[in-house]
Image (cartoon, rainbow, N blue to C red; front, side):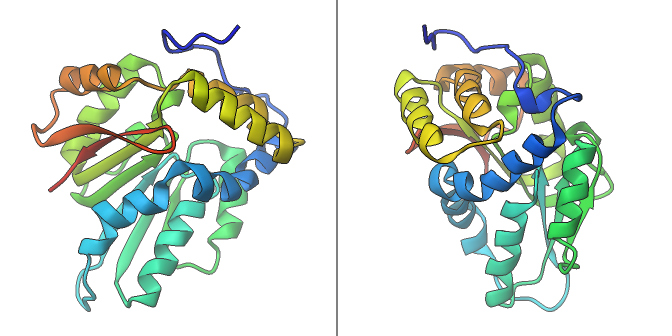
Amino acid sequence: MITVKNRSDQLELMDDPECDTIKLIRTVQQFKLINPLFSGSRKLIKKYFLQQLRPQTENAYNFVDLGAGGCDIALWVSSWCRKREINIKIICIENDKNVVSYARKQIALHNEIELLSVSAFEIPQDQEYDFIYSNHFLHHLPNSAIIELLGLIDRAGKSFLMNDLKRSVWSYIGYKIFAGLFLHRSFANYDGGLSILRGFRKGELESLVKDARVNTSTDVKECSPGRIFILKKE
């Protein structure tokens, strides 16, 4: 029976340090399909960050991607900026050593992307970042860790956007139908459904933002399909 009243605390298969590496990498590869179709990442990043950027020859804009996985979002941001001659430096944060090995191969020809194999809580504090982003990352964390992370990135970033999943029965059913048809031999079918059950309602995120005592300009917003995100604008 599907229940969405409270956040699930069940561990996703890909979060198990002993999980099958082949299935893990296949799951990360499938994010290249899942993210453009369902996450709304490109739309949100363009609306709240990229469209405000202008070509410049001096200091590069700096963008941080927390829980970057295979760096597919960073590669898209890099491509978008290159076409418009926008100088950008992208820092990807990924803690899973197996995923990091795969991701380094993906960004090998992109000097503007730096991949750090550290926890999101170890984001370098030696500068203030123009924009910090995460996609499908917060739901992997317990509430106490989310509060800690929000306080950290509020201090580190001029702006940030934490994009995640809105918990609902319809999102769960719709995803499971899609995954059953197209996502095989990976963790994406099982973990994707569980991710939704680990997702959030608007009031829940608003409560976490309040407890984190972040900048008063920080809002919780919703958008389709089944998205919810925390936004702090400069």
